[in-house]
Image (cartoon, rainbow, N blue to C red; front, side, top):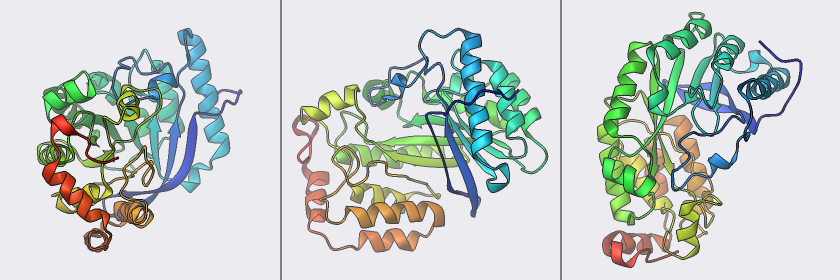
Length: 328
């Protein structure tokens, strides 16, 4: 059901996404919903973007009005992929009323949909019903569940991120999604709170290896300091530094499969950054690589001559948990 009312979602935009070595026109929508029911991750500010104390019927009305705005604003003929975010979990019935899942699947029927969710909300019943409405035969896998796994290390996920689920939970959800005919996209978080640069790099390398057997797509998110978060508390007290872009390049070059990366806040103090001189070229190159998959581009970026590379190498070698960060 599409509402007669129009309400602008939190954000929406058109762009391109790489899918199986092909570039697709993609529509990304961030719906304002009831909000993440976990709402406890140390680095996340999205929990503030929600409707508060709304009844289920009122929440459904808001979401339907946002969907109506999207369908009015964007011509379905102009895109073939849709990425859906709700600042939480699209398949959480407390955050998104189940009726809206049917509305969304019908509105985007025939599109390739990637929807973000925590693993506990992935069930045969929910995915089967959604795919039945969404699928018109255009895609072998019409739906991908995007899960913020962050790391394959349970200790880091619990202590540094406070994510609230285990790697086994992710594996079980991935198995359920695949059995229901859906794919899995894993989001990995590079350099969460409390890790040195070297520890973060090693964690990502291990997470790539551990995650590949269970995920059809992997996206690495270099950590960004969002406002009103526990991470910001430590960053303001000079107890945290976002990752170096040199580290991001090194990881993308070493990944056994193509890993996408969009370094949000890249080149800024709150985001992944180097010295400020080489940042723009590297951030642009990382985004170009995500679309092209050209590893020679990563190699060329790693060959950039900039004095901050020596600083980064020193940090990798000498930074310790009891004296970090060594730089800002």
